[in-house]
Amino acid sequence: AEPRCLESLNLMEIQEEAVEICKLHPDVIEWCPCNGLEDWLAWGTYQHDEETNVRHGALVLARLESDSGTPILQVEANIESSGVYDIAWSSSPLVACACADGTVYLYHAGAAAEEVTEVTEVAKEQLSDCILTHVCWGAGEANGIVVTGQDGLVHHLKAGATGIQQIQSRKQHELETWCVEVSRMNSNLVLSGADDSLLRGWDLRTPNASPAFSNRSHEAGVISLACNPNKDVQLLTGSYDEHVRLFDLRHMKAPLLRSNRLGDGAYQLSWHSQKRGLFAVAAMRCGFPIFELKDGDEGDEGEAAAFNALGGYCEAAKEGSHGSLGYGISWQIGNSCRAASASFYDNSIHIWKVAAEDASQK
Figure 1 (cartoon, rainbow, N blue to C red):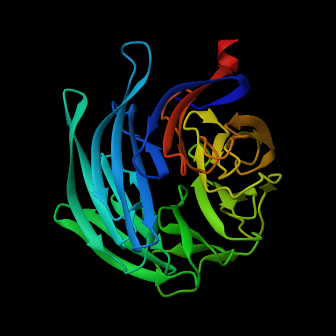
Figure 2 (figure 1 turned 90 degrees about the vertical axis):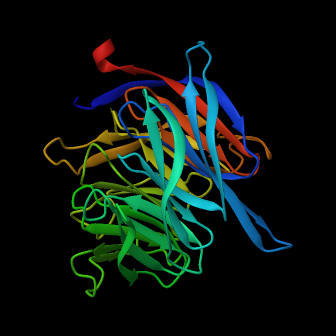
Figure 3 (figure 1 turned 45 degrees about the vertical axis):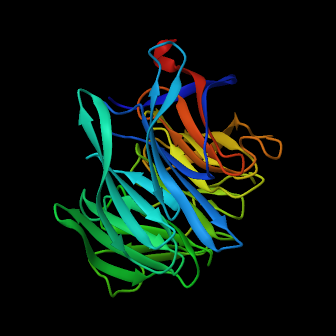
């Protein structure tokens, strides 16, 4: 169905639906995009023991059950690892994990009678001695993967029946690289951001060429990227400079828009799949603000007029409570306004819902 514009969003009616307390610090979260599995949720945890210098964590998969009327998160799998920095679902469904020991893992969520019954490791590949920080599907083809890490390298991989194939790697940044994204407009264009404050593009078809672009608009490290699922030319970026920016991928010299200061870094971004222009931010010590991107000139699909701040969830969280260090945010796939958020130091996952009213329902 054609995505609809969100006419109003009543933020006085944000409702907490479920809470899960984790054994370790959750730092990333993502709903499953697969048809029939939209109630499945994955998150990663990470903890560093400074005395022993040991890093450990887990991939956790859960299902949101609401048959009884009250939503409950039912944990189905807890797979221990060296610490999970990032996760990404494919449409298979496979979950890719970027881990602290420099290994990327692939897990398959097996289905039976519409319910996932088991999670199995199907492949793994050691890419580096450094922490892998981000992973994304769709590089060049549906089963293509890109992974990046602390050493500034971006790795192009392919998931196959016999495991993970390393295709090529490229040094994109001199400092720690935080995020990688595949353009929805061109699956051969890989985007990356790092502590060098650079947003760069890499065309997979020309591995030895200079970057496709190198943007210097950010005033601090670039830590999150998200392509708009409803407008392929639009890219959101988040930075430690506390701003969210909107770019048109056809014109990368300067951003179209820049938000006001959030109060902390924009660590993760999540577009809503159906509510056109709606996105949320995991803004570290400033909770989870929600924005609407107002359309500009209808004659230009990349044009946008303004970021409209709509409020948020746990924006004024006290130290030690949910939102006091928000690292993960994800909108559930579909037409609902349900989100999942991950808060680091209080070890909590929250499921919450925003009362929304579409113009079509008026």
